[in-house]
Length: 637
Image (cartoon, rainbow, N blue to C red; front, side, top):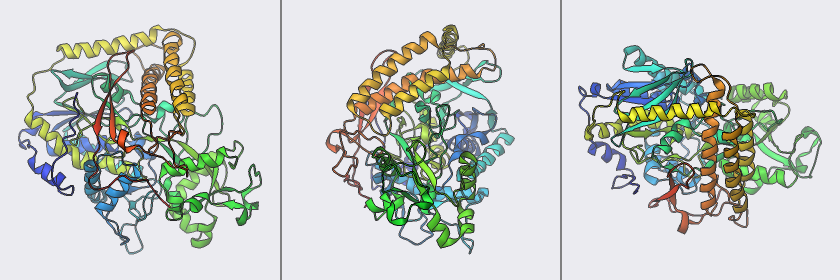
């Protein structure tokens, strides 16, 4: 298999414009002849479905929830990047491109990242036109804040609920198209397989989560906008419904999986409070604009933080990285927090936390100003911890958050399976080994509003489509395989719940494949996950029936996929003998404890091909070439 990224030739600033001109178009009158299936209704999925329908295509939209407003995109709190340079502090498309490639530790495609920076300004204009209530300055101009990994203010925000407001904008656009009839919308559907007919992605098998019925949806192309796979770690900042089944089914149908080990640890999470916790809550990175991170200089100091004088506090990020301070990228801030706690400087009952303190900002600007910026985040923290962050520093600790890996896609956002497109967090394309804050919303909306609507037309205009109906052998095979998988889960009749296995997997993943990874631990993880998977298929207990509303069946199917994906993630981390971004191999670090890349051996995208159940996956490599941003040791000092 040869992975052709289809990167256009020419200067990087002209690639996208030239590519759009050279792509084949579908006549407006012919667009109604094509049907596109969009799986997922978060920011990427809702914006894509709305935009494709607006162009005139027939769209089938499948939502996992009862409403698109429930998508996990609402959890993105802090903001969305765009280089409009409203603050006149030196920002530009090129600087956003540079910061993103550098922030990803030089493990992303230059062409994709530059295009993302190019179209991000259009995203802001689109959202303003939809009525998204971005924060504004006194004079009425859109306001900006800073985020980690940048020395400019380029992040547009709507208090601490940016993701929710952007999703409402995309949802309104989608609702309009549902009302016109161009989008056929199906709620509470769970995609369980991809239909590959004559070498093309032509449809999906989905389970009606209310009735239990398996349904077939057919079209000319399939778009997966189903988010990331952070819940493979059990405890993460992801909603419990976030899962990897759609992309994992595609992987097992031939779509290669790129860089699965590139997972992001977010530094600003409320620490775990007990063994019965099922998820973690994120505090927005935007808080690092005004909050100062510190630990006591004395190990094991149990005093109230208010009783610890300034000279006995270590503002370690400001000390180690004077240029960026508390706004270093997420991977750097996370590693340093773990380091401080590992050395015995952690705070709180578990000692696995550091302080995020707003006392200086409140003294400087006043409590009302801080409340205007972050009030809902402070309220959320108070509800969860019963502590007042206006008077007592927040306690934070890193947690699994975003996944930079995902299905491999070319420049057109199409996987190696013709007709199968992957957008947003479900693909691997833009963030390399570490995503900069406020870039997830940027990528999801850029893919859906401004990239996919162009590129998918070229595929439709240049492809031949044979008739595919319910009686087609590929449809019958996919439906039969899904039924068999469900029947197998229900037939085990073991003693352990699906959640029990998920927790066990999470322990292995966090301890061996989490913030710090090493060869021995990864080899142990691969063996332990394989053994746990074998135990799962012998002893899981899935209650209820297939033809009914059955949450346990849904969870069991998720965990079966996670037990396979977790092993692939560990294998990818084991093979990549370097540290880069969120992938930190303890054997490969500088004298200062920073990530140490090996550009000669590992400057490539690692794309894994499924070769059969029980068989080792096959590794394919897409070389990464850097013409504009030359790889160097990342420095934020």
